[in-house]
Structure formats: C-alpha cells, structure tokens
Image (tube, rainbow, N blue to C red; front, side, top):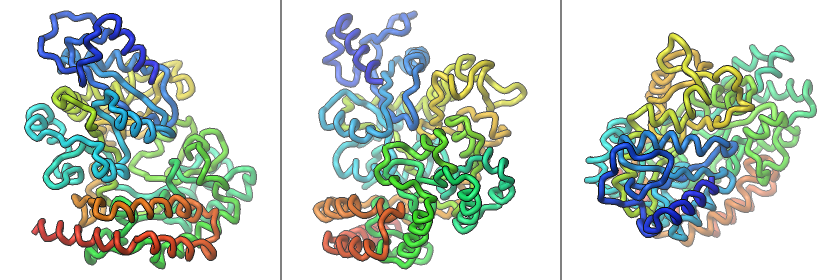
Length: 509
C-alpha cells in the first residue's frame, strides 16, 4: 500500500540518505552475514513491485512483504517493496508513476494493455543476456508462450503461467440454485440460451435480484459472456474463427454476429436481467455478487474458477460454461509481468522473477500468505491448503486470492475445494485443449495509424459499453456507432493491421 511506500522512503531517508539516489537499488558491496530482517538496507538490491488488488487491499500486506524479504535476502541478495493498488484506479496510477519517473521496477498489467504499453514506450526491452543468466526458470516455465511477448525479436515482459486459454462462463450462486431446485438445470448449462432459460425462472423466484453483470469494470456483458474470437488486441480488425480458414481480418462491428448478439443482450436488459448502470457502475461484478445484489456474473472461466470466487466472496458457487476454449495473444498475455522504463537495473528484477516462476516457497507467500496464519496444509495431500482453525474469508488478513497474477501459478498451492492434487495438471490439459489462434505471436504496431486509433478509441468510449451492456437500443445506436467508426478511420486501421499481419505470416515461413 502507499503507506508502506512512504514509510519505507522515510525510514530510508533517516537511516541511509544515499538510498534516494540509488535508482533501482543498485549496489556493489556484498551484504554482511546475518543481516537483520525487516529493514531496507542499501546493501541489498531494492525492487519496487506494483500490482492491483482485485477486491481489496489486504491488511496484512506488510507481513507479506516482510516474509518475502526474508526469502529474497537469502536467495538473491535483494529486498522488495510491495505497492498494492486498488484495481479501479490501477491503470491511472501506473501511468502517473511511469510518466512521472517514480521508482518502479516491476508491475503487472492485463494483456489488453500490453501492445499499447509497448507502443507508448512504457516498457523496457528485457536484456537478453541478463534474462538468460538470471531468469532461466522463467524461460523454462513459459517455453513457446514467450512468443506472445516478443516483438521484432525484443522481449517486453513475461506472461503469468496460468490458464493460457479462455472460455466464457458464468458464476452462479449455488445456495439459490439449491433453494429453488434449479441446481441440476444449472449444471447442464452449455450456452447462453440455456443460461437465459435459467434466468427466466430465477428472476421470477427472486424478483429483487439482478440476474447478471460483467466481472470487471470496463468489460461488457458481450465480451464477458458471448465473445469467442481473436480480438487481435484492440477490436479494430479481428479473426472471428481465430484464423481457422484464413488470416483475413474482419470489422467486428459490421458482422452479423455482432448485430444479433446486441439484440440478444438488449432483450436481457429490457427484462431487467442485466445491471442497469453496468457501464458506469464503479463496483466490479464480483463485489456486487458478494454483496447479494447479483445472482451471477459473467467472465472468463478456467478449471476450478468457482474456488477463487468462493474464497473471495464466501458464497458457494457453480461455474456454467458458455463457449469453447480459445488461446490467443490476449489470453496467453492475460496478465503480464513487465519491467517499465523507470527500472535502472534489470538484474535483481529478473532474479526476483526467476523465483516467482520456479520457487514455490517464494510464490506461495504472494499467492496465499503465511502458513499457519492465512492457510494450512491439508493432511495427506501434496498441494492442497485450507484456512487454519478460526480463520474464514471474512477475517483472513490476506485473502488476496490472485494466484493468476504472479509468476508460475502451476507450481503454487491450490485451495482444498478443487479436491485433487492433480488440479494444475487439469489446467495444463485445459490449455492444450484450446483452439489456438494462428496469429499468436503477432503484435500490431499502431504507430502508422495512431491518429485514427485515438479517434476510434473515442468512438468506442462513447458507444461500445452502452450497446454491449444492453443500455442502448441497437436498432437506433448501432448504425450511428458503425458510421462514427467509419468516419474515424476503422477501414484504414484494419488495412494497416492486415498489411502487418501478412508481412508477419510471410516472415514465419
């Protein structure tokens, strides 16, 4: 939290005035044996790591930082300062930190921001020699997935190794399903038509509940529950079948699928099934679900997604799966750990990343907290954990439940409700089962059409969420949206992306 940041700097100012000049904590003299813990020392490399908190900023974050630093001092002669930030303001604060030249060595981002961060020169090119020397565990864990973060031979980050595919689904309140005898019907859901039939019944039985919303701020109902195509980073030219037939881009907003989906969602909205102010509501879907306002929320669903939801909300939850899994740059780069241009020494950062991708003892502190305080091992299992006696989701001092945000989730513990030590093997099988876009590894350089992209972004900000959340009548507003996109230059942008994609394909052969 910010208070950790300023307390750390104040302490450093009093004890070691030179720390303020050290930039990325570079140091050359070795640490003395038996150095006291819990104190930032300029003899250790200093790493500043920022990340978002999906639901809340945990109260025990200082305890987590202290525990991490006990490990880092011994293993890589470094210390980390954690900067946890609220998801709602995270992008804005990252932009301010980077543009303001604040000390920041590592941060996480959603994959949708990755290509724009490269184009806006926010990310450092990872030094290949330092990467090979200090981060072999990262490269071993990610393998070919590194292609998704490599542009013109330069590496700009590291995808979190987790579910590398996506499928749309819905988190449903299991207690309400059991109360009304609808559990069996919910377990049989295979598509949005099945979900609509369930909403029809539940809305009559629970008229005060809103049926659903999108999971995250800025994401629409359409994107969260219906979309199953390669959006190619920015939606300006997409592969509707992930390049199955050919690598010819389409204007999503002119497709028949888009128009029909908007009509479908508008019908849900008119029935009162969708949050009425979803486009401007500052709360996330999971927050509203936890508060009891929603029966469900839509979003990406990996194997065992309901476990994360239950741990975060305390609500028994059932996952309904709505689409088949696909793997694209955006899903592989669902969350990326990146080194910003404000980092002056990549070596300690890469050493830290190497631990997050290869050392369960370090990773589990970030993922789950302190053993015996925030979790305990389940007897007779290798990887399963649970709350210690007296601890629940309501009083857990950490409870971040964001293993999908850090390093290599596949070497982390799993919550007991997944029921098996083979959970991460199931995750690997899920990844391998996905339809992989033929454009994985291609990243669009929008600089030749940056003016048009800026204009298109403005048009999307005006129309897209309102249409895709059902708030705007597509009969009236879709033609206006399409015309505004044409006037902003969408055809020029798609043509430039197609030109680059064709060149990329030719270079692969």
